Length: 125
Image (cartoon, rainbow, N blue to C red):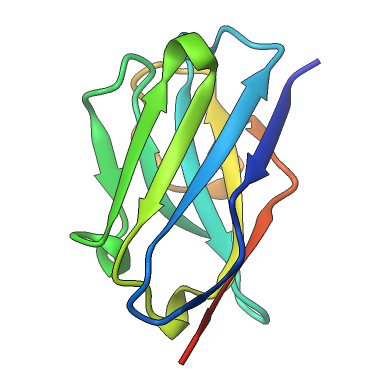
């Protein structure tokens, strides 16, 4: 059974930094593209970033480019999202997702096969 468990979300001031983690189990982790999505209140879930199974190929949504980085530690079955220069509009529930293709570049929620339960990130002024 595949499980994705996010952690690291909390209340942080604007301009601050935060690192989210997603621990995966039940899958051949290095064969999966991993991604982060987020969903703000009243809005649809949106793509944030993704990283290929072996790392190296990453994609970012325009609103987070230059501020967020994504990385993975395959021996630890964990993917990270480092968020810097946080803005109030980054407030959302952040979800980890997995796609069975190792080099997948899609950004649609429907194209990811597994999801975590989410972790809340709140950015205050």
